[in-house]
Image (cartoon, rainbow, N blue to C red; front, top):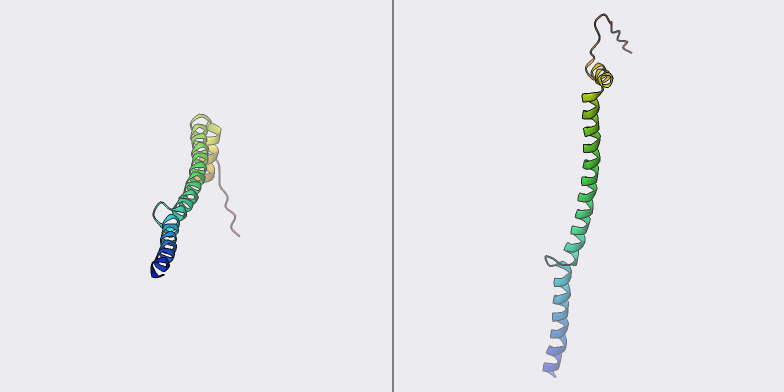
Length: 92
């Protein structure tokens, strides 16, 4: 009787430990799900950075090849003016 009791509950405890190990141990299902989320986040970051890199490369090419655009950027960003021009600032 006692042997039957130990075998039944021992098997139940062993199955519970195995289930716990599959779920929560390193390399288990929970770790796998967390890694999938992290990979998805990293892929989104990579995509965003690739887009930004492309835009910056286009900006560099445009600044190197288009003198009018370069002048416009320098005038707006740094407040440069041509010789003989006057700048009027109106403050509110």
